[in-house]
Image 1 (cartoon, rainbow, N blue to C red):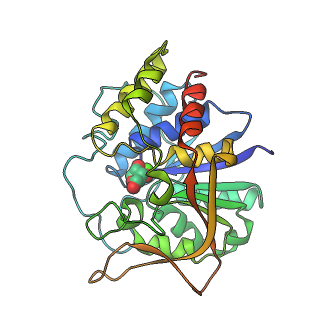
Image 2 (image 1 turned 90 degrees about the horizontal axis):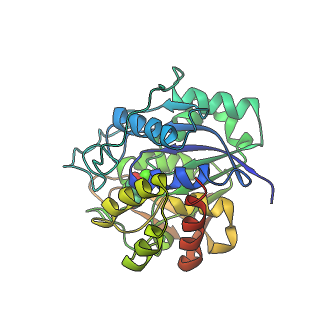
Image 3 (image 1 turned 30 degrees about the vertical axis):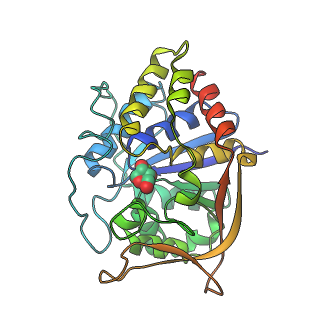
Length: 302
Ligand code: RIB
Ligand code: CA
């Protein structure tokens, strides 16, 4: 399978961190052209700080980090208490700060420039709210047919959400952005809660990860352990794992609609029969044991 050349758009975030580490550990399958950050699990300054900390932790300061949008397109982010990801977004573990900084170019402009420079080459991998991707499509509509594909974590097609309005968090933060992206006609693979809820962290799996763990692996485990105290599903790493081994997953094609009415189930996504627009490939089945073994095997390579 040809190597995937990707931009990861993220809101690290504990599971975002594992998704990034998994990608770093898989250079034969994935080339990360850049990392862009967005508000989501925590504020933009913190998601950007965390993306820099994770690249530094893995010795991948060569990968540029571009900060993006600090709020959703329409409604300001609803302030919540400390995220399930901790106050700092990475489990409050005191992980060292990076010595390098984010690039000066805004994430939206980085996405546009990269796609225009390499048409048909780049896969976008949003694993947080889709604000940056939507604004790139609005600012430069011509990139839509130049994006190779979008593989994203967000939404739920056939199963309940994980927020108060039965929405999934990434979409709930910015449903208007999701609507722009989902209606773009770009080939898309969706890792919604239908799939990612199966990627769970059990005690037995933690015990296996702990065996002969390297220092960086121990840090990854500590990050995951924090997550395990809240939502024990490794949502975002499903996106990276798909690019490494798509046989871990199966899905169906469906048109996905997003609820943007604040008076309704704000942010909820659903697969609709006879909907308008291009169907999305919705992942519905995960071989979670093989997925976990892949994560264990690859994190040991870091
Ligand atoms: O609902 C799960 C998603 O919300 C994940 O991307 C997690 O990082 C949070 O952003
Ligand atoms: Ca995320």
